[in-house]
Length: 120
Image 1 (cartoon, rainbow, N blue to C red):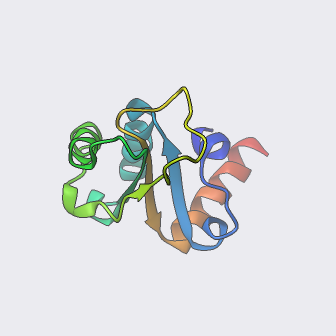
Image 2: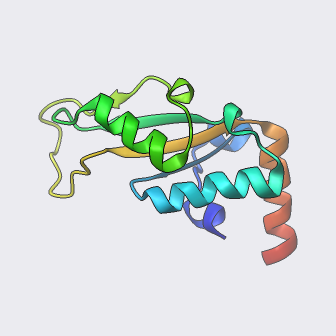
């Protein structure tokens, strides 16, 4: 249900990638555990991308997410930093917004099939 509601549904993702983006470490950790336990995904295959505000400390944010998700820093891809002056939100997250993903069309199809079988 979580992936169905919160999973990445961009056109690009719907063809080859399973991803979840959130600022909630507990939600993302649940997603990581789900991929590992139900689909046998090895954490070494997961990629993590951060979306940060210009005032954020990238090193500190990466350490926060690596510790909370139990994913090594070597799995982190290039951080995206919001350009200065573009709509600073009142809800700035100190450690940014985090996307956990895996590139696997086969896994994506398995998840979609599971959702259809259980809920549709």
